[in-house]
Amino acid sequence: MQLNDLQWKILEEVADLHKTPEGAYNIRSDSRSAGRQSTENIEIIPKSDVSGLEIRIKPGTKNESVHIPVVLTKSGLKEVVYNDFYIGEGANVLIVAGCGIDNCGNQDSQHDGIHRFFVGKNATIKYVEKHYGSGEGKGKRILNPVTEVYQEEGSSVTMEMVQIKGVDDTDRKTIAKLGAGAKLVVRERLMTHGEQKAYSLYDVELNGDDSSADVVSRSIARDNSYQRFDAKIVGNSKCHGHTECDSIIMDNGKILAVPALDAQNVDAALVHEAAIGKIAGEQIIKLMTLGLTQQEAEEQIISGFLR
Picture 1 (cartoon, rainbow, N blue to C red):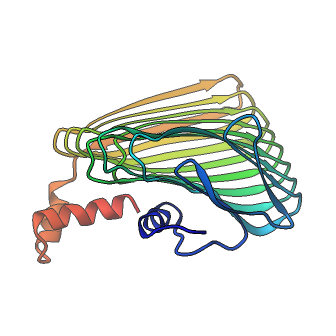
Picture 2 (cartoon, helix red, strand yellow):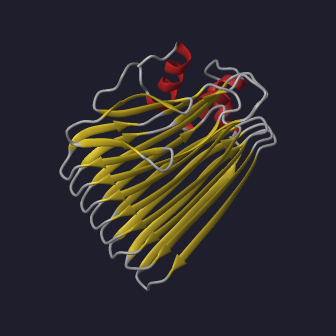
């Protein structure tokens, strides 16, 4: 792959890549594939009707990975990408996505990524999606991910969703439908600052007996930024669902948490927790007694909170 230093820096931020990854990958840069590789068990196929990929993982595939990060470095570039993942029965894989935008111009740059996961019986995936923005231009860095997850019996999906720097506007939607015994775990980490806005919506249906979902968001709103967290879990069976919003507001930041629990079965056990507040003064004072300035103390607390 022929990538410049800026592109590699963004790839490091969103996918922890310092070089061409092992295993299957597709690196997308400024609306083009900068490199692609399939393996014996993981096939990456470009779509013919729209921009995007089909990723097909054979049944029983173990301890393999797929990297599909996206890099935008041209101001004014806007794109919509559709990626479909078909995870075979009994597979156990890591999928690393993420998008970074560096905008040094005056036009908005935007990436909308629609990812659909069809997770086979007893398959296990870990999905990591990181978003990052940089550049000194006046144009916005806009990221609007849509994630759809369809889980068959006994499957397990763990999702790590991270956005902690530089994204001006984001509208994040996650939809999941779980079969019997399926398990979904989501860990969202989000920080906004300046005039940034972030919307997160989760709509989870627990359709099979003994299915479960655990959706937890930890976020910080600084300066004049705004966040909204909508979490809906529908229990259509004997199931267990849990959502949690744990947030810190600083300066003039604003956060709205909107829980929705819909029990359609007498054996559906659904729980929501929410806590929003400022950093406790005693935490700052304790760290300042150790020699830190107030700003250093706040940054230490924030770093630990979002870890």
